[in-house]
Length: 171
Image (tube, rainbow, N blue to C red; front, side, top):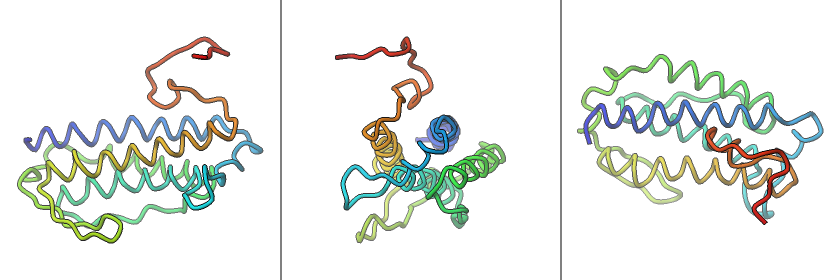
């Protein structure tokens, strides 16, 4: 995987799905936004926390590739306003990063923590086998948690590509 491949596998993907998080959260009225505190089961993150962790993974993926410290992403992700502010911060951050910033990224070994495991992975493995899957895990869990709470969102809200008529159901 080249430096350009790492750029294209991360920055455009994170920019696109950051917009999807923003679109989903923006659809929520004030009563629905309270469901961002809802969790699928008691011992898991809430929908808002999952979206926030996903946003954090975007930074935790890109900045080690650049050889830079991961910036703190504020405010917290416990409410719609915080998630939307974080989305704007991520959009600005990723717009400022260029292909040139990725020079040498494919040669890096990324040291990071996965739960309680200390890992060292080549950049390609870090991105494709760890970071991107974790980003999508938390994005999907946030989406699924809101869906399970009754929020009318669909696949098009998740990926920004699919379209179905209002009220469409597979079953």
